[in-house]
Length: 481
Ligand code: BG6
Image (cartoon, rainbow, N blue to C red; front, side, top):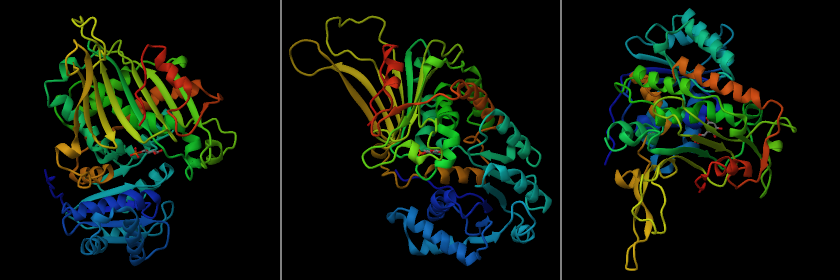
């Protein structure tokens, strides 16, 4: 099946922080792929804005190098690359001063969508927003895109929201969580709400528990100074994992509409119970196999920051009361895998009392790698010799079923940037959602102040204590592989 590409309206997209790492790795390559796919009208332009005194020509060379490094060889096409580079312009600006703003204002055109991507430190959001308004570069129909980290706790997130709100309305603000742009994450909503099959069983009466795992093999080398102040809880749980939890647990929105969806997500976050101390395990990776341990990667050689978190939480509402949700994320683990596993309860009565092999039904939604869904069901083991049960997968790999090899699917960033141009906020976090997520996270972080995380060996599934978190409930984590 070939994906349909619907062109967006012509736009001017200004990327602040255009010479930074995110622009190089994700934003520029992603925009190139959308241009290659034919989604970008010929008159659309991307204007880089950053501190460094580059010329537009030098910025194009910078972008060309980024494409060479981060676009897969099968997507490299000299003509398309040149067309893309021709769309690029550059203005050196001083976010906190006056330089460059008049020149940027002079480059903006009327009659096209204006979007501003703040790929800069949150401390600069206010300065940039103020100058955009002051110089008449942004107006009431412009859109601004902001990156995580959106605050480090509730007060800082509230302050950022207040800063942005001084210049823009909520309908103009696009807070990116790139997990919401992943194909399978959106598929979660399609699977739940476009089929009758799952929803009647999607509650505490039938679901024994849910496991959400985001495991990575990489460490934090190179990002030590950011990560050490953040840790897995702020870096992954407060945002990405919380979003996955919301999409799994939320009530059906009345419509696939930005506020309807975000209202339902917010209700889930607000219904989360506070987490008990004994229901959280923090870990920190050791060195090994030629790779540095966390304490070498971190800025502080005595750091107590966690590179791993596992926790159990409960949602206090009619649908979920009694069903635990287990969340686990960490760096330097055995494999890179992100998945959600919904384990259903056993049938109320088994007619196969003496049949060996019984296991529960499990629905596994795989985000990466090998995006797809897999339902584990019980069947009779083939052959004579009595009734023996065996668990088999009903496997649906999206690549196989949809005939996609994955290379045609837009990645999370490019999909989300196109949504900004379309003016669709469904896959972006609303200010109140982010604040509610911090309100839940802050006491957890405060509760472990000063405590040392459990060390774990690289290439494992994290500290032993995390296994115990489920064992003591008579359950076990799925293997990370
Ligand atoms: C980022 C985190 O938001 O997400 C990183 O800051 C993490 O620490 C990354 O590695 C994971 O994203 P993905 O798409 O590779 O799973």
